[in-house]
Length: 397
Image (tube, rainbow, N blue to C red; front, top):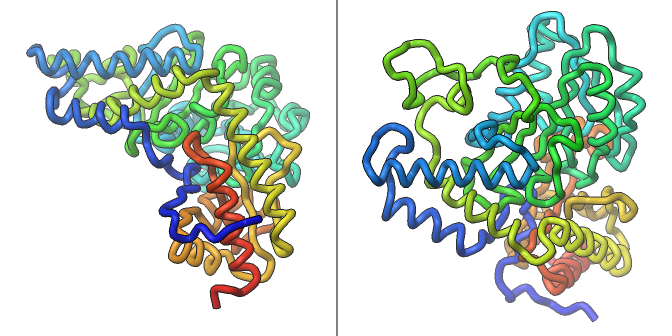
């Protein structure tokens, strides 16, 4: 029997945008840096600056372990996955190049690609996925031409949560000498990722989602065997190195890290990364638990709510993200009721992925989206199903 839990406090299901709450160790790490260290890494030789530099290096090493990289200097810190993708995409592409991507991409990928296409720098092939958001690797193979320079794919859809077969796609790219860029904004910290096993050349990650770091953190990871000189920097400036020269340093990570890093954010990212990597069962357990929560929600909602429609599938491995709606009420009204009366935080709309919604037939309105975290529970899902059932039956009007 479902019960009214509207007074039970906030239920946060917007983790696909930004995870909340953060582990206490993340907050403590940020506060420790801000109150005890506070200095600029790599710019000075005093103790506090050295401690700040040690935090940055430890965070690189943590990312190295996370993605099975060998050289921590190939972890480039950015303010988010969007910046990392812009560096990778704009950095490797030249006039006349051909690019392949999918209809599930986030605007962080599609917008820079579209802009380059609009400026007639590149030609672009967008491969349609099926309704579950999965791409057929053979379609990638068929689309490769002698001018194909890059394949860029998001590891998992931020709309449906479905995970792409990047190992097969990476193998095709390697066989054809094509650069493989993977958007891991949704999967870092949720799905085990081996950059070498998947033949990924450049990987973009967000720190504020599955890694439980603060906002304003993310990065670009360059595979050990990939020539980083093929990537032109997006920005130039002070690095704390070779300060006697006006040329940008041509070594890693300085080639791509101009300006002061967000060390407070990286302190939290380090704590968040260590937290998930040290959890019992590791990332594999996190992935399994999120799928259990996803399946439980869909089954409970379908069983109890007549007007419930899910666009995410029970039969497709997921990062714990579900797209859905109530057929008899707008998604904006539903989201407002969930937030204002029941304290349930979710996201409605197109989720910065218009092509994905065109693919699944939910454009232009979009869907509601629940994204589960390691802190969500079945009881919270029961509460949300009760709330959605009440809204669907018109009890809020």
